[in-house]
Length: 230
View 1 (cartoon, rainbow, N blue to C red):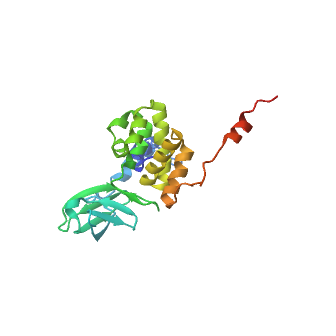
View 2 (tube, rainbow, N blue to C red; view 1 turned 60 degrees about the vertical axis):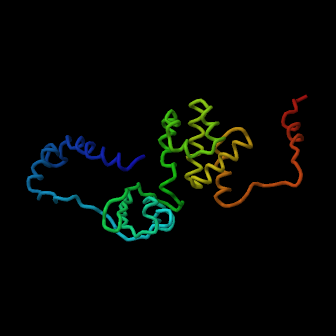
View 3 (cartoon, helix red, strand yellow; view 1 turned 45 degrees about the vertical axis):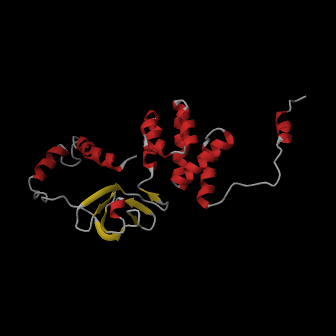
């Protein structure tokens, strides 16, 4: 679901409802509105802009951080410089100290740390269009073993893997999701969602995998669960 797309569709949908008759006057609502509109004053020459402007200093990599957890890239050439940052409902606009526009990013929300450099913003689209995988930033950001494995899968398996990554990213963040998926791939040969999300959560928390002093022998369980009824 995308708020921008919804807002674009909303006026047309509302105008369609205007074809109905007014519940009291018995006339078309569209016609009544046309009459009312003649009395409306003209709109301002410039659109109303709901924005909060603030000054922030970019870090040594040229990033600014909003709310202590959402990082947006201005570019390495702006490292250490004071930037003017505009916070809107759906976007973050970054200007240099003289007010010249540098870049605009989609605004991130929530408690999970985000980074505008993360390719995770493409994950939702790739789940719907897995054929776009080979030309995606997500693929470029993958470690070689994971990239090569997903390359070799059919479209259905690739979609399932990307959905697992999407869920893990939503719960634990991009870096932990990729680390968790790679761990599950190396240990099981696949990328099941439950395993990936669990491993990603562990990576996000800083915990390592459980290590045993001696190898664990599961053959007794194999016998118990595969023994045929006599």
